[in-house]
Length: 66
Image 1 (spheres, one colour):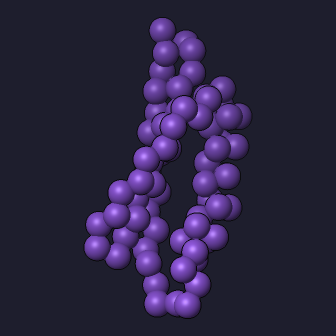
Image 2: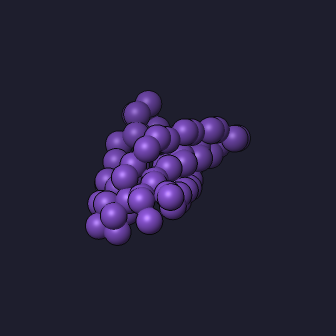
């Protein structure tokens, strides 16, 4: 049997000349979430992203055997 978790992160676009600012700004927080769940015994399975207005929603999916 498996246990599943979803972690949702929201990032907002800002006016800048750096077209990759969301990717650059989000790397640290995403890595922290991956480390946090790995320490709890979860495996990262996949991710999705959606944009709505000026926001980007990133969903991280984890699973572990119970």
